[in-house]
Image (cartoon, rainbow, N blue to C red):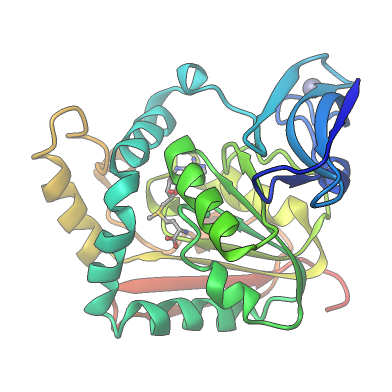
Length: 289
Ligand SMILES: C[S@@+](CC[C@H](N)C(=O)[O-])C[C@H]1O[C@@H](n2cnc3c(N)ncnc32)[C@H](O)[C@@H]1O
Ligand SMILES: [Zn+2]
């Protein structure tokens, strides 16, 4: 059942994006079972239910965001990080701006990340957070569409508000980097900045980024080095409820996860960035660039 309304207050999810989505459980095709769709902006879904043709699961779209995880359904580090980022989402932006000030300024840091990606066509940021990279993605005329996923509903809500204020038509999903709710070969460029160092399963996240990228697409993954990560470890020990959050895999030191890339990736490069406070892993899915 589809209800048409004359206007939707958000930039919402474009109806055409449903064709890009896949069930994170079985990769089955999703269809809009029920929806409230706006005529202004045209074809934008505000509320709805996505149903999987494979396993029969349903996933809600609320406030224009398709939701593939339930906070109570998350386990381990994913649950911890969703709770952590939900708790700090209101102070996340100023915190990051202050952190990046030591690395040449937020604008320079984010512009550098986006230029390493050289984005074009349909772009996704995995772990988009509050959308700090969006101004630099939308500044690129080669970028046609922007999508974003994050595990924190709080971060996504801030991102959605930013998009509404700026009029940016970004389609957002609440989900896990380790089980992306998108069909194979859907994106022309994939960006990830911050987060993967402490993911539950870094190899799965890299595999998923490669899976959803089209042949020839470029993928850029950036995070901090051990020098910064060890600071987070010390800091989080002081936070009640989050003391082990940044412990990392069995207490190992952070290294760029080049060994965890899926086989066959091309143009693999690892660089030290942010005056050795960050690393950048870039690669391309085989196929014509
Ligand atoms: C340091 S923030 C980076 C946000 C954004 N990329 C930026 O540049 O500001 C890390 C983000 O990763 C998200 N995150 C953590 N674990 C995740 C997971 N398993 N899947 C998807 N996102 C995750 C957090 O919710 C958070 O928004
Ligand atoms: Zn399914």
